[in-house]
Length: 70
Image (cartoon, rainbow, N blue to C red; front, side, top):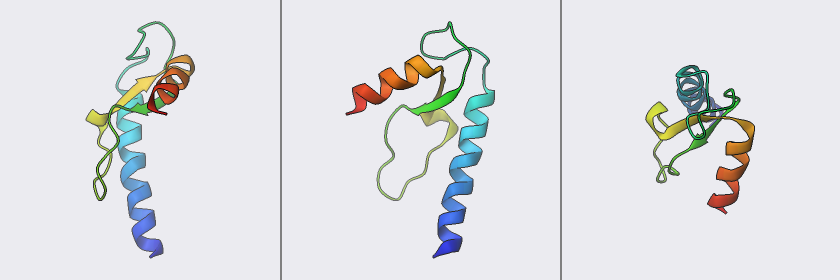
């Protein structure tokens, strides 16, 4: 099982790295520097995150996005 978890973690990490390097400024507000990624849509069970499903965002937009998701 550990190999599967490591593989999933590595796949997310790769998608995260691509998304975070895509731009220097928040893709949501266009003002603040990028610090985190936010999912556009939660993946369906068994699917994985892809860079196209992640937004590179600042801390404020990340927090606002997380509040909207709940």
